[in-house]
Image 1 (tube, helix red, strand yellow):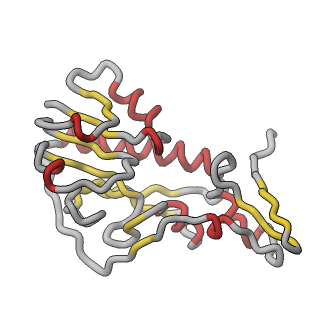
Image 2 (spheres, helix red, strand yellow):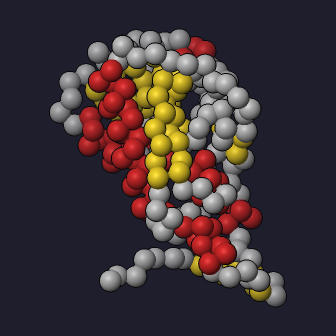
Length: 209
């Protein structure tokens, strides 16, 4: 069985987890250019930022995506960040079939992840990466003896996060905005606040015990 992991160099946080998983596995490989992928049994599309047409999707037997929400709720961008900002610590990871419509394909598996409410961005990513690989590994062990189900229920969509979404309210307490601090990417998208027209970035780290 030929298995390909399609990753995006511009969004490559998942790369270390995938590379470790495919190591020493025959007929497993990592690719970064979707135009080079065809005639494979399974393609896992992870963190890839492009939307595919039917020409790509039909070139391989099965195309799968992992999305961190209980689809059809929470389609779209940055589902973990948005859900944590909503106050959720129980988040469902969904493995589903990629089709032309975004985040709309049939579901193969769903697994719940429970956060303790104190993880910061890097820790959240670590848990996200490990759970993604766990879901994929379980699927591959069961495939092809695994059924899929059609998405049902009301769909909701998360928008792409913008700079304004990382803004803190200087009139609220740290505790009130702690989830906002938790999902902040210190390096690329730190939270920020503004006082009298002056803008300041704020970065958060766990103190060593």
